[in-house]
Image 1: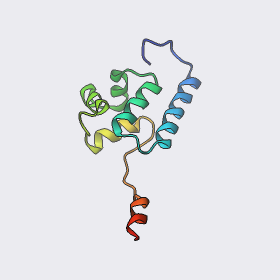
Image 2: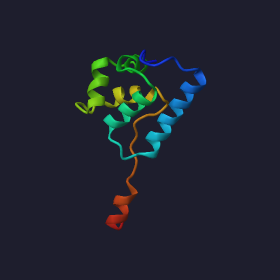
Image 3: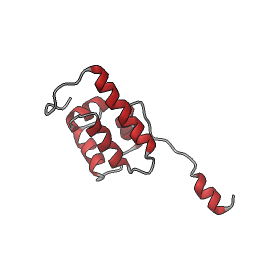
Image 4: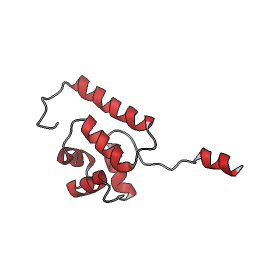
Amino acid sequence: MDKRYNELPLSQQLTLRKQAVDDVLANPSWPLHQVIRHLKTTMRLTAAEFSALAGVSLKTLQNLERGDSAGNVQSVNRVLGVLGLRLGVVRDTQDLDDDGA
């Protein structure tokens, strides 16, 4: 946990993690860097703590969070995997409806 905050009980930590996931799933239009920043701040983690949990370098996490790099699938999945999420490909049904297919 970020040292700027008092340590939270486990139940509150779990509540924050659930809220972070719910927020991300409710906002599928968020760009990747916004998702990563939201996850990190909602869970009250420093970049160093989050990168250690994810198993990626601090520089990689910072580049993803700033939007300086789109990263690769493996590193993005490691970051999202901290909360049981992973990068996926889905069909955009709106495009299909517009094309008449």
